[in-house]
Image 1 (tube, one colour):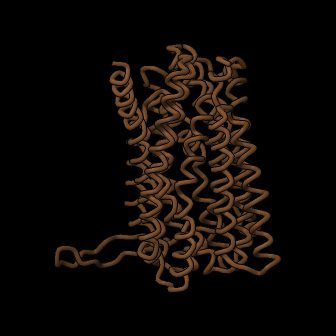
Image 2: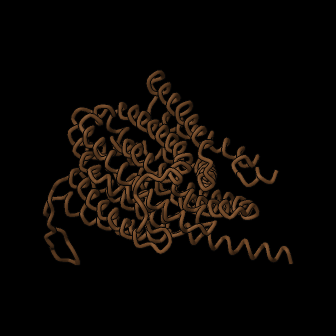
Image 3: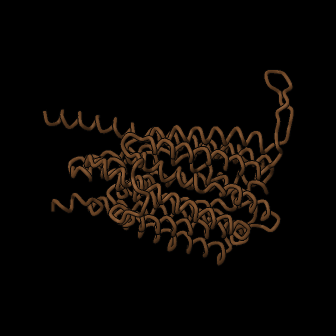
Length: 463
């Protein structure tokens, strides 16, 4: 009887996990599909265009990872409040999220637009590519206020168990982006459609057109998700004060600050990593850019499950349910490893085909295929790190991931890449080998933490 009840509860938990995870997976899939299409469209303009777009990508990671990290504090607070059925606290937290969007979005917009001309120089972009890279960066990051709203408000909705709305908004953002790409990147041209010649209008803006398309799409998405949050039946900030509320912001910041420092530190590492790769020339830069785009799609199951893990562990923590916390741990890790084994195998097999979609250069395809197959082998290990970090975020334990990621990024990836490229004169393959070593270290550290149970605050209370 006990076994039957446990099996029934496990099945119910699996349904809940999948219900939370699949919208995020679909949203990430759409985003990756658009990245693929963007990269393929820009790739038709030549290797220099691909390099110009990819040269400042890691700076974007730095910006958005810091914003995402700040949203983790709201995720932990709202998911815990919802688990405890404390709707009043959830709404107060949503109001503070609105205040944060206004402050952070405005500050980031001013900073990025002011530095748009200098960033390609700092990133060691080749001189002939710098003007295009600078214009692309400026246009893409002008709508940072609505993009910040999309990130923070989307996280708030997911923390309340609503993963479908951010998914739907994301789908529309991606569709708008693709349509505008088609109209803005290419000039007016004649194409064959069902055996007939059809004239397709186009602005012929090239790389700048790709940036403009994304900027318009993200602006629409930020406005739309703000409207959804305002009308949400559970966490709507309507009627709440937008003045700073220390009772809400203090615990949010205690969770968010270590995660923000972690993401800022690791993203700054990505910038340093990319700068060293950019110094290898446009072939290495293009191969690295395309490989990053290709690889991102194969992490979708992992990050979809991470969202579910963070939300459900936060709910269990808020309800003080240690038994449910243990059940989540034993269910998430095996499922995640299986998913990442499948995606890693698919990446290994399809690497040459996928690289060929984005570049006509044989050198770029060969180099990109090699590094993708290297990283494919380590995906199951990285999947454990993704889930472990998500569960720690759900219970507000963000200091441990901060320490782990900073050590891995700067002591393994950056120092190792510097030695390989600047001292030993090696190339992109060696740099990606250092990245894989970083992922393996994270797997080992997170696994030790889970085996010891030090990540779970409810386990400590029962000792």
